[in-house]
Amino acid sequence: MTPEPRLVEVRKNVLKQNDVLARALRERFREAGVLAISLVSSPGSGKTAFLERILTLLHTRYKVAALVGDLATENDAARLARSQAPVKQIITGTVCHLEAAMVQNALEGWNLRDLDFLFIENVGNLVCPSSYDLGEDLRLVLLSVTEGEDKPLKYPTIFNSADVAIITKSDLAAAVEFDEVLTRRNIQAVRPGIQVLKLSAKTGEGMPVFVKFLEKRRLPSRSTHAVGT
Amino acid sequence: MHELSIAMSIVDLACEEAESHGAPGVDVVYLKLGPLSGVVKEALLFSYEIACQQTPLEGSKLLIEEVPIVVNCPVCRERRSVQSLQSLCCAICGTPTPEILEGRELMVTAMELRP
Image (cartoon, rainbow over all chains, first blue to last red; front, side, top):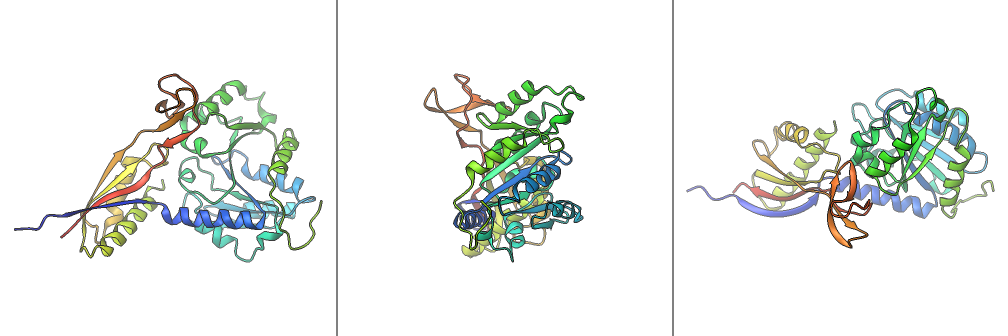
């Protein structure tokens, strides 16, 4: 007679390893007094242009740094280095999203206490990044005016995982007959109550509002040496 | 498509569990999957078979229980289901409800171990 299979209760999160690492990162960011902000969006929605602009705006007053994830090339890091902020590229190879371990590895050699803001640009992808906590304090989801108003409805999970939604490329809104009211309604439908900001990295429209938004959330600095004002 | 890496995590987790129970292999892995987990059932099932190859889980089955989104409706002050993933409103009174109680699950709940 064959013995019966044994049923055991498990109750474990599949991504527990990532979640544990993400929790440790979040704790490290908090202790170091650095606000970690991640960016997710589809490819081409303007994450890098937005980041370049925000790093340039912030770096005269604050210590800022960025990690940028891509499947291949160091192009984004080279482009962002023009802002003079420290930037590190994370090349994921065939992996379509960032994981907490990649962020942890990329931070090696950086003293987080010397930073006020750390930006983490995820791989351009509206599906996979939603499953992975990176330890960030704020997750921004970007949506450009050229993408179509129903994008939040098509990718509800990523919009639901975000803390703030940013409508980018506002300078092109008229040319593509962008329906802002409909877009905002769709964003609110999949993530009720989320704050939505509209801006253009090209013209600078809306950028001061975003800078103020970040400044309000800045953590008490634990800097080891004097930094800006 | 990140389901293959998710499937590999499931296999790692299940192997660890089987080993801790001294079982030579696994017949069934039970998984709870929420619509907000960001994981697609069909893609996961397909990836699971590949991830199991040459592991103690080879030939095992993945049984996925899809669980609904449950929110805390601020008006009803009750646990409620929502209208849809595209409209996170209380299914009863229609109030938009950001407070999600369930629906992000990606959890191994049980396993059948080979004797």
